[in-house]
Length: 123
Image 1 (cartoon, rainbow, N blue to C red):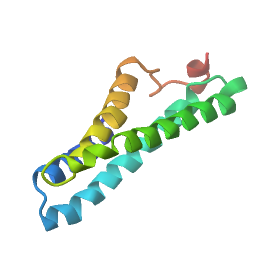
Image 2: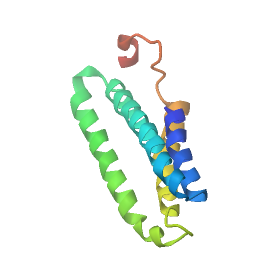
Image 3: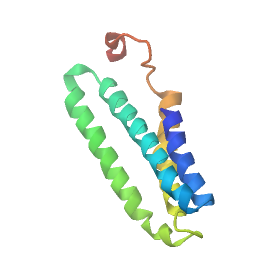
């Protein structure tokens, strides 16, 4: 999961430092691949992390708070759009706390789910 977050962020770093038409044509697609694969994993991770008896409600709360945080982060960091040489610096301020930090925290402190029987994760 942190690899896909890294791909997502790396694509935007390349766009920020090399804002030429060919780069801007290719690297947003690479970024979209990274974000699609990255967001797929936290949704699955979150759903499995809760016991079955509260899974639907707990997942709804965490997913809703995540969407609210994504909205608030982009909205609050909107004024940073005017900073930087090519108006792309603000997205780096969104990606690091919104993608890299959560992916690193889950990788470091999260429940290890790979190769584990589902019933073991739920206990």
